[in-house]
Structure formats: structure tokens, C-alpha cells
Length: 124
Image (tube, rainbow, N blue to C red; front, side, top):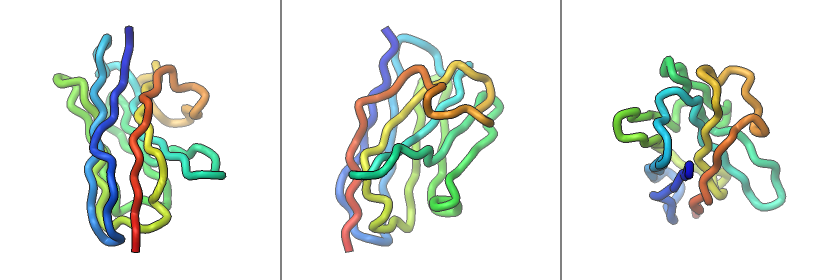
């Protein structure tokens, strides 16, 4: 059984930082494209960041320079360091895995496994 479990969400003031973690079980993530997504109320789910098996990274324009994705294949964990957070970063954040070596052109519907999500709330 493949499972993804996020942790690290919470409330933070604008300008602050949070670090999200995703623990995978049931499979090794080293051969998967891994990504972080978020969905705010009334909005579509968007990819925030992704990292492929070659450690190439992809970021949404809205988080470039503020968020950093990383992965530890040995521990089967994926992380998202979020700095200089903004109110508009408020959303439910999800970890996801896709059976692709590369993340380029992998759409949300191509991701095979999803976590339950962790809530991030940024206040002024």
C-alpha cells in the first residue's frame, strides 16, 4: 500500500517560515517525480514545486525565490521550505508522486499518489 503523509502545516504570520514534510511508505521515491500542490478555497489545485529523479526543480512563479523543495531518497521524504510567506500562500498543501522520472510536462492528473493534505494559514 503506497501512502504519503504530510506534516508541518500550521499558522504563521506574513513574512514567517514553515517547513512541510512528506513521508512516503510502501515504495521508494527515488524513481518518482515528486511534487507539492496547494488548493485554496474556491480555487483550482496548483503545483507549487516539483523535483524529479535528476533533482531538477520546478517552481510556480508565485513562490520562486521563497520556497525550496528537497528530497531524501534514502528516507523517502519530500520537504518544502517556505520562507517570506504571504497571505496568499494560505491553502491546503498536498504531497504527490508521479511514476515519471522527470516532472517536466507532468500534469496534476498524472500524479498517481496523493497525501491527505496539511493546512497552512498565513495571517497579517
